[in-house]
Length: 354
Image 1 (cartoon, rainbow, N blue to C red):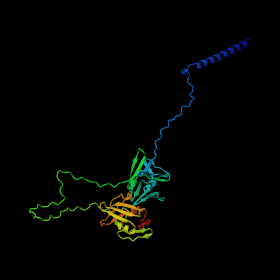
Image 2: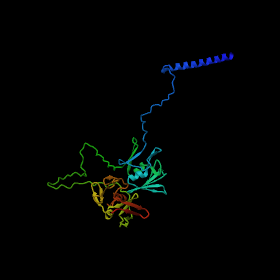
Image 3: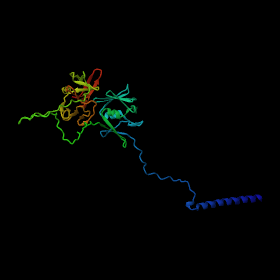
Image 4: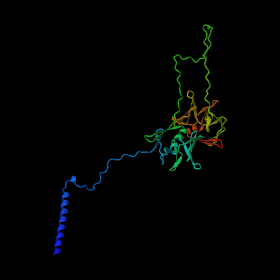
């Protein structure tokens, strides 16, 4: 009997517990939503349809006379705050011949009368025998010789500008500077004629006499010193044949060979014209369809080839003897030829399509 009573009591308690839980759940479900306990947010947030802003483009471009240089593989990079650019890509675009000396790990760049030697791992490079110091040594990245450009370019007559807004290096030839002009001092007096003062003439001139010729003041001689040069006993070979040379056929200045106009006219099919007013030589070669015109002024380092401004290290000069000489490598390469200098035999070997 007691067992039956306990069983009924336990059953009644179970029913009361279940009923209480059901009522509590029903009350929760009937509560307003703004008082409901927060449920887990199982919905995915809406996709961000707005495109994130592009990351800044740090690619460095190089332009030469507004034409962009296309690099085959390795692009310019910034190391230690300095921009390093592939030597071959830039200098070949400027018309230089680029060769590599594997023994000395040196890039050799040649054009006209320029020779630039850049050694990997060195803080210095050499242009026509003059050493320059680099901020960052030349180095090899992905098989390409990389170098800071500014000094090597300036050493061969080009200037470099950096556009930070577009990460662009612009290269252009240095324009020849115009001679500085000085204005005469302003005075309230009228300018005096350029005459030598004469003692007062106390004797009146006879009537109907012819006036004496004007008196001119001798001008001081040109005090600008001529560059140091020496007549060079150089052997010259043109398309495999030795040329007849004279003692005055060539001179050497700053390790650059200059050829006389007489030597040039005797051995090349060229036409030479001198514009006296501007001291400019106009040298032409070729027919109407392939004519090349070179304009080179005395003491000017910015000659032109078919109107395009170039840059040379050693300009044309007129010696004290009155002979005119122009850079041999420049004039031959301007006409599409190649010149190779052999220091040991003192020989200039010229290859030129006739």
